[in-house]
Image (cartoon, rainbow, N blue to C red; front, side, top):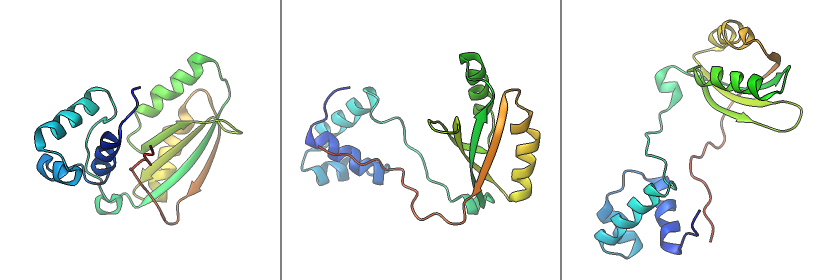
Length: 155
């Protein structure tokens, strides 16, 4: 990973907040002309700093009003067992995020469902059917105080 200069850091900060900004407006905010600004953005994309651009959808507007945080403990921790779990989770549309974590549990999932009944169906028909499944602990999200997609970028 290359060290980012100040301008590249600013580009990342701005694009995280507004991925639809025009190159002209981005250049104006940076105090550069559009051609070198576009060149820098393309370089950041090619180097993997920018993985993509996406719309942030309100889950309630698409009838996914219930969010759960699910802690998973597996029975076995060999590579094949963990990999099998990972592959299964990748196929579950309900799983928004999956983290392999340290501590008492092995994985933490963020799951989006229409309601608690749909979540129960997800647990019974998908999660609990996995061969290596140990404990499943769920926390229902009551409200979201902060949900940022922008990472802090420091010099």
